[in-house]
Image (cartoon, rainbow, N blue to C red; front, side, top):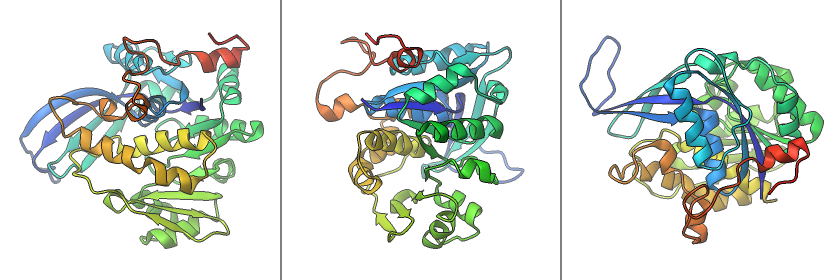
Length: 327
């Protein structure tokens, strides 16, 4: 089983569904409002756990009602939350507007996430016990950089999602093995709107790049190799929130199974399509987290991790970090 550590945000998503997003100074009427667990870190942890990974979540939630809901949501999926600390004050929130085309606009208020400025011995141990470390940019950059450098010193492969996009220090990029921006983030980081040109610029900074292109698929590029475009399967996108995080979480599990990036990308396109499409089934699946596919569904075992048929892989990674025997 792939062991994955995720250092990242845990937010409560406050989602408004509208026919079209409002412009500056404009008010529009929405048709539906949901509060659903999210955060880029938590979404990636959930996706990896549901794809069969053994996942530990590193981060923080607040002492409000959202904090307990966020923790419970992760634990239900089998994610180890021993290093998801509870701090005084509000949990992080993301304020999301989703239009009828499935596009979204997001404002993130860090809350408890903003208190994660460094990592301690427990976090170091969890990273050392993992095969991969997943990072995003919704936590303070000091902690993200420290974790990446720790992973590099330990020989742990690091995947960075540069979102929300910002200038990245060399000390962080030097410790990143795979960078996974979307096309807008890639353009801002590289100064080139064309994904192929952007990928070549980014390869000066990191060894491998995957640029997600929405309905056009994704572009993979590596130093010394020709870039490869992986087309996306046809799908009706109702809400793209969490689709990119599902991409990264399931990709990480495939890489942890020993697949090369091109092989992993060829094998996991269906899951990302499912993540976007499932949210359209409003009666059956009303949250980004629930739209993420379980490995059991693909394998045909008929049960979900942490579900009634038996517990998921909770706490085994933390036991390994502590030197305990996993049960």
